[in-house]
Each structure stands twice: as C-alpha cells, then as structure tokens.
Length: 617
Image 1: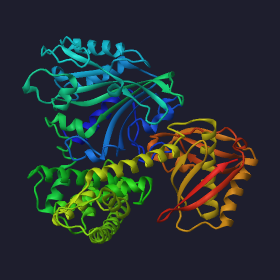
Image 2: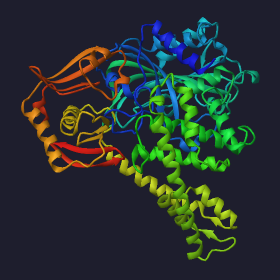
Image 3: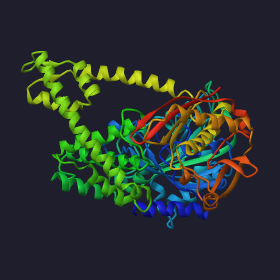
Image 4: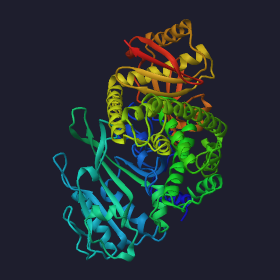
C-alpha cells in the first residue's frame, strides 16, 4: 500500500462514518505562544476540544502536517522524523471510548480497509495514578473487539515478562507512556490507548516485558487513541471536561512502512526518490554503510522539513522558527559534506520533495521559487560561516600553542559552535587531522548550561501557555484583527499577516512589509484602532462556506485550517465595516471592552517582514 492510498483510505473510512474531512492547518500555530510549530493533530483544534463549536460539526478527520524538533539529534535511526503527517479522527463531545475503539479495530483489521492480522495486534492502556483511575472502559472495549476475532485478550501485569501464550494482549502502562497532553503547561489532556503491531511474526508470540519488546523492534506503535477527559489548570489540577473528546493519531510514514512489512520509517515512497537524488549527488549508495545510511536519512528528513517550513514564508534567522529552520538546513549541509557533496545542492533535494507532495500540499509548488532561493542563500551563508570558523579554529591552536596529542578545551569548542556556528563534528575532524583531541565532556557541559538558560528564558517568555482563552487573551485576539485592518489602511492593502503570538500580557504580530514604520504611521495605526474601540462596535460571527466568505471579502491567512465551512468575524455596523476575517475565534462581543491600544515596539523580524508588539492599557 502506498502512502497516498493509506491517506485516502483513512479519510474515506471516517467520511463514511459521518466525519467532515478538514484540510491540514498551517504549520504555524495561530495565537499559541507555547510552541513554534504544530507538533500534533490536536494543536489546531484546541479551542474546539475546550468546547467551542467547530463549523464542520462534531465529527472531524484530517491529515495534519507536523514538525517536531525535540528529537532532532535522534533523526538518522529507523524511526525518528522532524516532519511527518498525522492522520487523525475527532469526536468533539459526540462518541467516546467504546465507539472510537470499534472504529480503530474495524479500520485496522477489516479486509476492506487495512486488513491487518488481529493476532499480531497488541494494546496499551493507562494504568491509573493519583490523577485518574485505570482506564477500565478502554480495556473492556478492546476485549470486546478481540473476542469478535476469537481471541482471548487478557490484561498483563505491569512490567513483567510475557508468558508466550499469546493471550496477554492488553498492557496497562503509566502516565509517561499512556497519558497524552497537555501540549503546553495547561489545556486538554487524558488517557490514551495505543495500538502496536508485531512486525516480526516469525519469531513467535511476545516473550519479554512490553517495553523490551518495543525496544527490540518486535512490535511497533501504529495508532494512538487519546481520550480528552480532563483539563489541566494553571495550578496543576486535573478537572473533568464538560465535553468528552476523542483525538486519535496515526503516523502516516510509520504506518505505511509497517503495512508493507518494513520496520523502518524511511522505507517507503515518501523517501525513496529523495535518497535516489542524494545518491546521484554524492556518488554513494544509501545502504553502503551505517554512516552513509544515517547521513542520508538526516539529509532527507531535514530538507523535507525545511521545504515545508519555507512554504510557510518563514526565513532562516537566529531566533525562534527561523533558528529552527537555519539549524535544519545547516545540519543537512554538514551531512551533505560528509557524503562528499561540495556544490550547492539543497535546492536540488527540495525539488524532489516538492514533486512528492505537490498534489497533497500545493503550497510547496506555489512557494517553489522562495524555497529554492532561501535554501541557496542559507547554504552560501553557511559556507562563509565555515570559513570564519576555520580561521578561529586555527587561531585557538596558535594562541594556546597546541601540538600533537594536546586537548582543545571544551569552552573553546563550544565558543566555536555557539559564536561561529561551527559544528562539533567539524571541530573533531579538524582536530583529528592535526593529531589533536577535544574535550567533548567540557563541550557538553557548556552546551547543557546554555540550553538550560535558553529553556528558562523560553518558559518565562511563553508563560501564557497553550490555549489560554482568558478574558485578556481574547481581548488581544480581537485587537489583532483591528490592528491588521489599520495596517492595511495606513501602509496599503498588500499587507498580510505573517503570524501572531498572544499572551495575557501583550500582543506580538508579524506582517509583510519591507520598510521601518515611521512614528507618524505608528500613531495612525494606534489612532485607527482606538477610534474603533471608542465607538464600542459589535463583533459579529457568522458561519458560511469558504467560497461565500471570500465572496464577501473576508480575509484570513489561516484559511486552510477551517475546512469547507468557516467562521467569519465582522467588526462594524450600518454598512461601515472595519474588519472581516476568517478566524476560529474567540473574540469580545463589543470593541469597547478592549481598553486603550498602544504599540510599544516596531522592528524587523526578517527580510520583508516587520514585527509589532502592542499592549492594551
């Protein structure tokens, strides 16, 4: 089965069962200050998990593009990815555990769909702790499904060797394994139930502990049903949600590999053409050695992720999303050099990525010129960085009078890495060529200290948390709409939103503009917004089709996330409309609730983009 077939089958299955198919959201979270990218299918739907009505109804399904960078150093093994697609189905207060599990079983085992062998399926559930009890409801529902296939599904004691009978099918695990969320410090969360498939059936039934069988690669997770029963509050309490939700996630890349008898997430047609191009560029074969295989996986993964991030109009920089993008591109270049690729090459690989995904994600094709231009520019810039780093490396040797078998201290190695962007691997190679050693323990100590400081800063910066729908955040959300309308009036209708980041303390807003705003322009924007606030105008919401919304002149950067029916928020009355935008909400009812709007900073964020920070007083 191909990835396209799996994606289509999944969506068709749930469409037949009353689910509206919604398109993938942007990789850039809207008004979520806790993360830089969408990391899971549930992210764009948080307002609806918390009770807001979705325009497409209570049953949804989608294929969501995701970026995760927490495991970036693990990419290169057989399972970690930076960019991946998550297939998901959703119940927003409609069906719950029993029905969701029945859907999962049918899709996995029915010959019409995936036709997996029931005897090769194993299930994990939440074992309970001080916050919530064992998930007996899921255990009962799974036993009922196994029973239909004539399989006696017994529950295994925790962390004990499996008896080899084949009857132990359900494994209660602790929260670290079977509790999902919240994605930030607060928000919807709950127990989950994961499905695993035996990818080495010839070795017989499970024999070791469940964890050991996973680590040995005997069984692979292919789907996760999350039951959003709780909301974690700011003070760490778990409160029962009024609306019980289902949120499932099936990793497309991993599952299609498993379906084809593979145990390697890269072993499918979403990667084969990329590896072929890298082989062509490097003159090496993908499987010729462990190191070559790892380098090609990293290169393919990172440049795929970079292409998708660039398609969102993000540019490489030294901060936030731009920094992640820069790191991905530069790591890819580094491993390309290890493979012997010395010419500018990243744009050639991105071209293959675009061909693979252009029909599913047309934004890649639309953004091809920008993607290729940015990759070439960053690759050239990194080349200059490496030159500077090499000069500094030689200066360290000279200043410290280092000779054969001497050790370059860890702080100096970290300085090369942090200040000059010089990769540790390059320093190691250059040192080896001169029969020098490097203090890797000292480097790691300096790196860890730097990461802890960065993390502490980020936690302070993003203290607003995920899905904070407090009164103040809602006010800032509405103010963002007014400010965009003001920017278009003052600077021109070509202005588009590039992203926003809202906490209870302030509004941060990125927009397309190449010149620094003058003090007069800033004041004009403030005056426009404050005038609309003073008029205490209504903020009205209507649901309509996307085509109707566009026909009415509604705008929205994040159109793709809403599906066929959208919410349109209009600010104004009596024929005088100040703002009409497609948006998920929420907003204040009248503009008078906002208070006084003030811009506290206007600055450049990247070439062709500016950033405003504003407050409500």
